[in-house]
Length: 151
Image 1: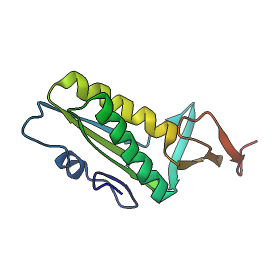
Image 2 (image 1 turned 90 degrees about the vertical axis):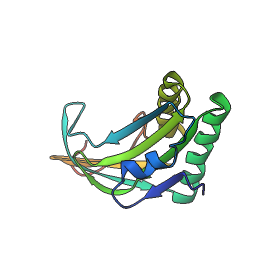
Image 3 (image 1 turned 135 degrees about the horizontal axis):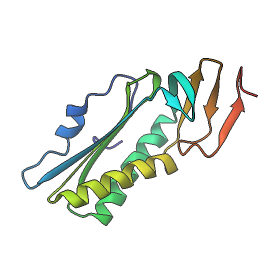
Image 4 (image 1 turned 180 degrees about the vertical axis):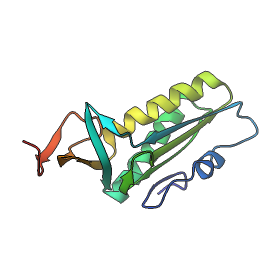
């Protein structure tokens, strides 16, 4: 596992992730902070549970950092994703990208979150007032087996 890419079962500390990419030649540090929202597609979420295949997930996070380095050679990236139970407003993911200029940091950050949803083996279970369901992937294009209250 790279020192800048990890899965955590503890609350995420934004500054710790930012510190990993802070450097003298960076004029921009873009942070993306993904939080648990209360309403998804009109359903009220009570909380989420995230699970990951940790070793592979960390490897894939590092791979995303390498892809960013290829596309934006001056970029430095750090990504951490949380697993376990997360309540509304809890932080699920923190991405920090530093670059000499702001446009690259914005683009690389956006690239990172989209790639996380595409290739990182992290799953979430949504708990609603009337049921729960495992979401098959983070892009929410496939779903797991419906759970209680979901028909």
